[in-house]
Length: 222
Image 1 (tube, one colour):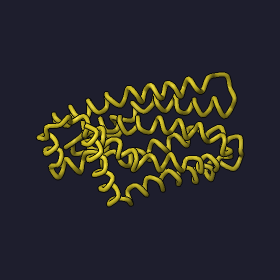
Image 2: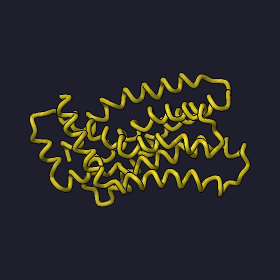
Image 3: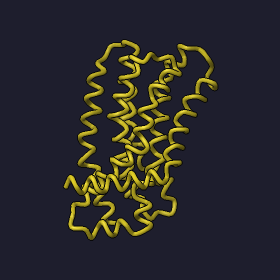
C-alpha cells in the first residue's frame, strides 16, 4: 500500500515539475493579491492589520484552486484514470497520493511564503508562526474538498465554473476557523486559538479518509 502511494505520489510530482509555470502562477497570484491590497486600501497600519487575516486566507484559497483541475483532468483526458480502475489496488490510495502531490506542488509553496505576506502587513516573524501552522492544517483540506469537486465535474463542458461552485461553499467553515485562529492569537482577544487549531486538525483527520473515498467513488462512476 505504501509503495503504491509512493509510486503515484512521485509520478505526480514529476508531472507537476513539467508544468512548473502553473505552480509559479499560483504563487505569483498569491503575492499579487497581498501586494495590491494595501495599495488599494491605503497605508493605515491599523486598517491593514485588521483586514490582513481575511486577505491572506482568501488569497491562499484562490491560489490553491489553481491546481484543482490538474488533480484528475489530465489523467481523465489521456485515459490514465481508466487504467487505474483496472489495477488490483485500492483506488482510494491512488487518489490520496494524487491529492498529496497536488498539495505539495501548489499549496506548500504558498504556506512557505506566507510569513513574507504577513510581514507586508506588519506582523513580526514570531507572530507569523500561528498563521503558518493554521495554513498547514487548512490548505490540505482545501485540496481534498477540491479533489471531490474535480471528480464530480469530470467531463462537464463548463467544468471549471462548476468546480468552483461546488467547492467554495465547503471552504467557508475552514476559512472561519482559520481566520479566527490568527485573529485570536494576534489581537489577544478573548478566545482560545489552540481550540481553533485543534478543530482544523480534526477537520483534516476527517477529510483524509472522506476525500479519498468520495473521490474514488466519483471517478469510478464517471
